[in-house]
Amino acid sequence: MTKESPQPTDAELIAAVLKGRKELFGEIVERYQGRLVNYLFRLLRDLAEAHDLAQDVFLKVYQALDRYDPRYKFSTWLFRVAQNAAIDQIRRRRLRFASIDRPGTEGDEERTWEFPSSDPSPYGDLRNRERGDAIQRAVDALPWEYRELIVLRHYGELSYEEIAGLKQMPLGTVKNKLFRGRQMLKKTLLDFVGD
Amino acid sequence: MSGEHHDTFLEWLYLEADGGLTSGEKSRLESHLRGCAECREERAAIAALSRRLEASRVAVRRGFRREVMLSLPASGWESRSPRSWAAAAALLAALLGGAVAVSYATPSAADPTVWGALGAVLDLFRASLLAGGGLLTASWQSLGAAIESALGGSAWNLGAFAVLVLGLDVLFLRLLIRASRRTAPGAANGRGSRGRTAR
Image (cartoon, rainbow over all chains, first blue to last red; front, side):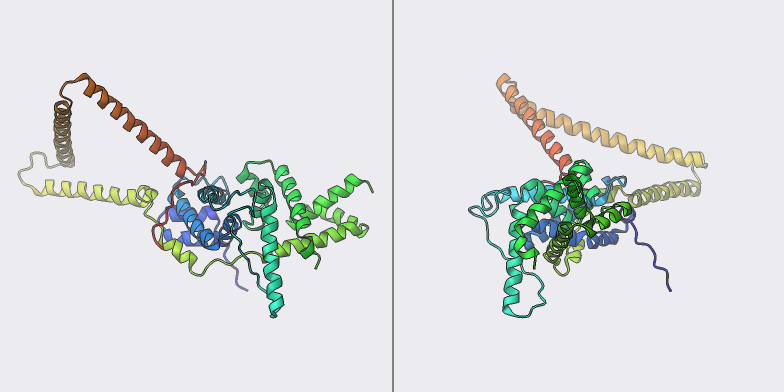
């Protein structure tokens, strides 16, 4: 049996990039691209825009890489930059989107989210689309303070500790808010959760 | 079973879904679940919710990593990196080496020692600095003369010029503050600018 070499940590990769191995930044992109795009997509509700903004975030982080302090988690920094970029983006288009706290208000765009289906029938596709839409609406309907944490946890895949670091909240508050947020979400999605 | 106790276990069910329970808490939860149908139902509902959320994740578009890597700009820190310093140091060492070699090879050199060569290089630097300083002073003097002739000695013109300079200072300061906020990882602002350079 071959012994696999351990994956380098984020801090090790960054140190190598700073020493001139620019190509290793690709490993960091690979590591975080899915989480970042999903996080931004849930906040922006536009997949192309989420990709564009994720790219911007990676570029901003790269440009400031020499100021990264390895005592802190890289993910916390990355998602903080992403969070601020998303808030700016939402503000920029607030003429189209009435409010981030009141989704579905006038000017909001209706979008449909599709999910992989094991059911090949048209009914299966329709059901998946309805589910995706329902999840998005349920997430959107959460008050911002809960929505933000739910998105960070489930789409950004951050740990409680990382979220606490990012939001500068006590760990207990993060746990409590996530508990409440998910209860609200579950209540809204009750029709789908049981089946 | 008290209501408070049940609520605690209810909260633990969510923590369990995130792998946030210790092994001791896990076994206490398991024994509670054996006797609590409501919690078992809640656990199934939480698992279903997690599955739904997971299934709603989107895929990253193909070639995204490559797009990012191709659009990476030349960053400020690259010019400050040890590699760049090493290149500059190597160039300086080569220049010094060359100066020493030239100094030894020249028969008319007054002091054909290493110190003599270093002294020659220092003299060269000093001369460059003096020439540069002279040019700079001359430029500023001519700029001052141009401004003086434009203002024509009028107190109003002088006042307007002072306001203009002050305004430019304030603008420059604000731009500096904004730029430092935008890139500071501690504040992790990242607001405002759109850094895409290629697509």
